[in-house]
Every structure is written in C-alpha cells, then in structure tokens.
Amino acid sequence: MPSVTSRPRPRTILLALLALLPMAVALRAAPAAHASSSQRSIMMDDNLLLYSGNATRYTTLQAMKTLGVSTVRATLLWSAVAHGTKNPATHRRFDPTSPAAYPRGAWTNYDQLVADAQAVGISVYFDVTGPGPSWAMGKTSDPKEKASFMPNAGQFGKFVRAVGTRYSGTYHGVPKVSVWSIWNEPNQVGWLSPQGVYNSQLHAVLPYSPILYRQLWFAARGALNHTGHKHDIVLAGETAPLGSPPQNGRTPMRPAQFIREFFCVNSKLKPLTGLQASVRGCSSFKRNGPVVTSGWAHHPYTKAQPPTWKDKSPDSIVIANISALPKLLDAIAKSTHRVATGVPTWITEMGYETNPPDPYRGVTLANQAAWNNETDWIAYEQSRVAAVTQFQFQDAGPNTNYKRTARGYWGTYQSGLEYGAGSGVPAGTHKPAYDAYAMPIWIRATGPASNPQIELWTQARFHAGQITPTGDRVLFQFQPQGKTTWTNETNFLTPNPDGFVDVKLPENAYGVPGTWRAVWVGTSSYFLSRDVSFPS
Image 1 (cartoon, one colour):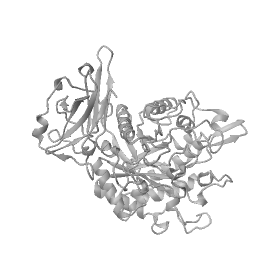
Image 2 (cartoon, helix red, strand yellow):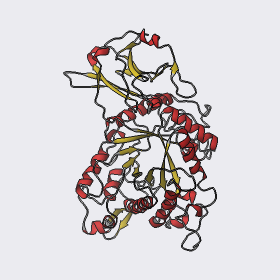
Image 3 (cartoon, rainbow, N blue to C red):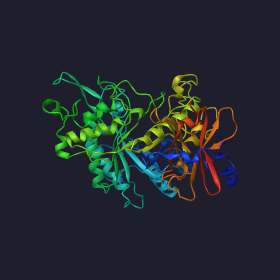
Image 4 (tube, helix red, strand yellow):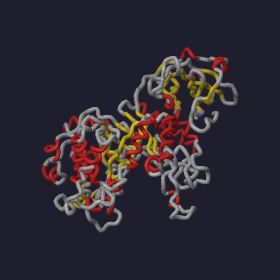
C-alpha cells in the first residue's frame, strides 16, 4: 500500500490510469444490507487535547479532523477543577454550583478545547467524572480505595451544575457542549469504590458500586437538566468490559451484573423486592423516575486478544458480544420501565496496545491495524451501535519511575495511531493503524453453503460528511497470489454519507487466494486502504 505521508490525504493521480486497469466481475457485485448506516467516529487523547499546550491541542484536532473524527471525548475531572477548594459546609463563601467560584485557570484547558474544536469543526463530548476533591469523598483506611471511595452524590450534582452552566452556550462567550456522559468506569475500583461491601442482613457481599453510581447519575442528570441540557445527548455507563463476582471493595464488577444491579433487577431481570430492594436503595426510582439516557456508553476492550475473543463469563461484554448490551437493556426496559427500549450503544473507548513499543502487553503493528478495522466492521454490523471511539491518537509516554526493562515502564497506554515519546521512534511517527483508521476495510466469507459469497466492506472515514454522488467513488481491487496486477472487481460505488460501502460477490469467482484493497477515488485524487489477504 502506498504510504500516505504527513497526514492521511488523497493522492493525486490521473484518473485515466485507473480506468486502464482490467475490469473483472464488476457487474456481479451486489450491495449488502447496511446494518448501521450512521455512526459517529470519536477519538480520545486527554494528554494531547488537555495537558500538552495550545499548539499541540490545535494541531492534534486538525489531524483528527483529517482522519475523519467527528467528535472528541475528554475527561472533565472533578478533582482537577475543584483542586484547592474547601468544603462548602465549613467555608460558606464557596458556592460549588457557580463556575466563577472555582480557582483561576481551573477551566482553561476545557474552555480552549471547546473553542479550538469548534474552530476545526469537531464536536466535544465531556465525560464528567470523579474522583472528587478530598472533602467530597468518604474516608477509608484502604489505600487502593482512598481516591475513589464513597463520593458525595449531592456535591457531585452541585459540581455538574457548575459544569452545565459554564458550557450552556450562555456563559461569558464559552461555546455550548451538547454531548455528555456521567462518571467513568464505575465498575472499576480505580474510579469508584467500594465495589462491594459485606451486608449483615444478607449475610453476603452486596454489590455496592451500582448503588453509588445510581445516586451519582440522578444527581448529575438533574443538574444537566437544570442548566439547559435536558435535550442534549447524555450517556450513562462508561462501563469497563471485564470483572469478577463481588468479593470485596476492590473487586471489579462485570458489566452485565453492574447493569442489573444499577436497575435493581435479579438474574432473571425481574425487579428486586423486599429486603433485596431495600438494601440497594431501589426506591430511588420512585423518587427520581426512570433513567433518561441517550445511550449506554461501554468500553469493550479485549486487551491482547483479537476482536472475535469472548470471555468465558456471559456477564462480560467485549466487542465480540457487544450485541448483548442492547438486548440486556431492552429486557430490563420491558420488565421495569426504568429505562426506554431501543437505547443505543456507544463504544466510547477501544484500542489495542502495540509492540513496539510495549514488549509486555502489545500486539503486532499489523494486528493493531487489522483488529481496529475488524472492530469497526463488527460495530457497523450492529444497528444499535451509534458511535465508535479510538483510544487514543498517540501513545502515552512511558512511566520513567521504572527502568526501561521493567514491565511498569510501559504501564501507560500504547494504543495510539502514532508513536509517542520514549519509544525509540520519533514522536508522531505513524503506525500502520493510522492510514487504516482513515479507510478501514474488512473482508469475510458469508452466505449459505449453496451460495457462498465474499463480503467486501470499507469506510471512507476521512471523507465522511463530505460525500457527494459525483465526487466520491469506491471500488474494490483483487490481486491473485503470486501476481503483480490488480483487477477491479466492482463497479464504482457511491459511499453513504458516513463513507460506508458494503457489497457481496460470488465466492466461487475467487478459487485462488489473493489480496484485496479498497480504492476511494475523488475528482482528482485517490486513497488506498490497507491490503487484506483472503483467505487469510
């Protein structure tokens, strides 16, 4: 595949050269059903967008825009904004609901991100989350729970009122933010604890983080409603994919169990009653009503496993069984009416760490590019998936508190599309996944044995939102193994507005293995996907 230098941009060519390539079975190409005709392309990189200065922020946003990113997710951290504040219960001059009450400069990075993103043409989605300032957190002797222990939901709601006011579009010229989520990975001890507590009435460990999260959710949702965001996109969840049965305060909880507990239903998805309901505070639904959410946000990581991998527990939700999430929510909706049916799934973190640079957790560079593309295709196949998020744009730098040969040195995240600092490669150098993100491709065998087919899927993501019937065309090319000539195997196809193209061909036309690629053709330029061997 030709390298696309600097940023992914179409390569200029004479279109007549493309027309000279031999056309094979083009007329046999049939469009496949579009499972998800519209999906947001989201990217997250707090280090570059919030903590690396104005110049880095702006150039990163420009690069993301060129790749086809429509929205950036950013962590709006309660403790960072409220750092240096004092408990309003003892310091009455501090009004936590007022944006102006927070320390000078506390909002600067967030304000600048919203302004720069607006200038570039990207929307911002804030995940408003704890942990909070020490005065708003509970006290514990367990050092692993200390930062995330027992946040005060009432104080969190007041903080979200300040956030909602500042980004309402009517506050001192600060642009409006219209996409939100509440808390991050509440089923993980690093973000919310205790995860479980022993309950003497039940004589068992009570899943506790869902109780805390329900309190935080209602407080924050009410605050957003109060500050002009009632009709915005407001997501619940941000759940992590894996976990264990509740054992103690530190044990991370599997997402399906967390969701059942959050909505106060049993393993058969029936509403809890009696003591089981009372110890969980399930009466909060009577006081607050249903969970009014625009979607359930989820992080379906598989770590170093491919996207087809499933955990042995049905309560785990990774990308391979992402369809379990809307099914679970719909069943709870029908049983309890505590959430609407049809709630979309938002994949709000996903990625694969690479080796290089991480020799302990990373997958190969080729696998990262391929697995990212397969993840995109799996998401496309799910009609309820409304968004897919790449985490992150550039690898995080190593943890220099450890020796370079130590596992902890690479304990940060190396799932970027670019290398970061400390990798031995100049920061900003593209991985193969960079261009593969701009135009993902996936090939698979499909259809019944009596009529086997090959499905060809791609997305001209880098041109999404700019697609025109006359200015954008896509075709698929095939190169038999051992040959050097590419043949056009489809007619020119027009992508949908988000850049998707999905067609099927008779598989028996390809009795020999070979390599496929997708070609986007503009009015005076073209772009190539990565090459895909099929059968692999």
